[in-house]
Image (cartoon, rainbow, N blue to C red; front, side, top):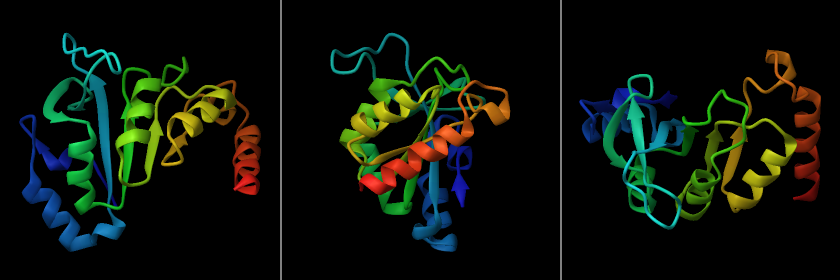
Length: 165
């Protein structure tokens, strides 16, 4: 079960909802989908900015900063994270490297990153920056959806990674 904005209300994480979902469906069946973006004006030198979860078509910032502490806390109630880099999602202009680096460093669970993938080189970047914890999803860049990235090349890239493992 993939859950997203249901666990947020008025910009706040509703832990009671998340706990209840984990109880009902089982933590091992729950993927927490978090759409993230840098809040303007809150930069730090480490990665260019702090990431926050956004809701309501990516327009409303929540109070939940995406960092090691929050990911570790949320990990008690889900089995995986699906993380959207919303500032690059759907644009086919490359990935949000700082966000992938953050996930590789801070996520205690497997995380699937979505946003901006437009080449096999982006997949290589995610593999490296994600330190083996971060996978990727590719959407509009695929040729089967009208993009330029051949679906068959992505499948072959994945097979090559499995053979190297």
